[in-house]
Length: 80
Image (cartoon, rainbow, N blue to C red; front, side, top):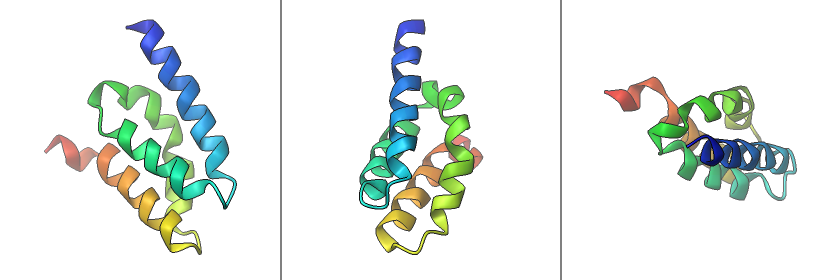
């Protein structure tokens, strides 16, 4: 389990770095949204939240949409 979390933590870091590049942001955030759907990765994804929130305000609509998907999937409201 620890190895899996370490792998996912590395991937989240890579995706956050890609999200800073306007050309890669929407794709990186899209993949991050897929990871955010997995409850077991919540502890890894919490570090991404500030950058995801910032991306919601991005000028590019695809980036905004992808960031919004991440936020919806990792937010407290998903716990119902």
